[in-house]
Length: 204
Ligand SMILES: C[S@@+](CC[C@H](N)C(=O)[O-])C[C@H]1O[C@@H](n2cnc3c(N)ncnc32)[C@H](O)[C@@H]1O
Image 1 (tube, protein in one colour):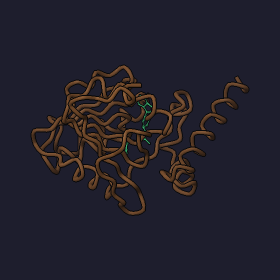
Image 2 (tube, protein in one colour):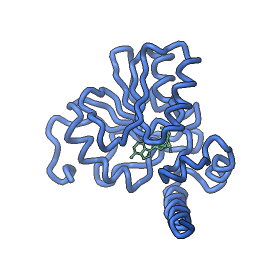
Image 3 (cartoon, rainbow, N blue to C red):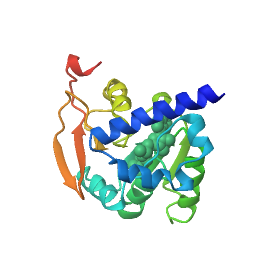
Image 4 (cartoon, helix red, strand yellow):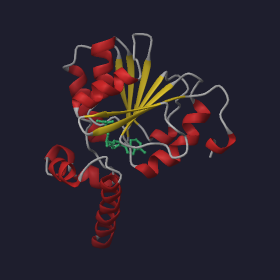
């Protein structure tokens, strides 16, 4: 049990280190967040899921970069407290689905949704994002560890329809070059549009 806990902490530290190295979350931001009881819980340790919310000005910029509108269905993969789909519904009248494996995040997102005034536009599902059918999304938002981004790329390109916009906070997708890159409050955000014909080298 002790060994298991040590391993979990070790894996989390490695992930945090890679977040810091890539410039997504600096160590200070992460430590500040991790000390907040709402984001550093036994459930989080059980699932070994890192949670750091995207600051609201960056959420706003991500939605603008994707040119979200009322026809859109947004999937936030790893939706945390639900701020991205909730904001998309409030500001643009979009519909949204938030996916998170951590039941505490889903509970928190649903509590935020109840207060948001857009309860009919958004739903949250406790699910592994790798087991989620993405085919209905017109916009996908991401703030995930680099190793998760790498693993996710083939699924995005396989399941999303051509023209679907993908916006990521902090992490890119390797040799799939983004269409646009923006700096917002010291954070980097990326935009890709799923092409009609996906080059073979991006399928894996
Ligand atoms: C860095 S937080 C981002 C939260 C939110 N998208 C935002 O930008 O504020 C990453 C979230 O992804 C979730 N997550 C990580 N791996 C996941 C997986 N395989 N399936 C579902 N959720 C996952 C974590 O629980 C965490 O809430």
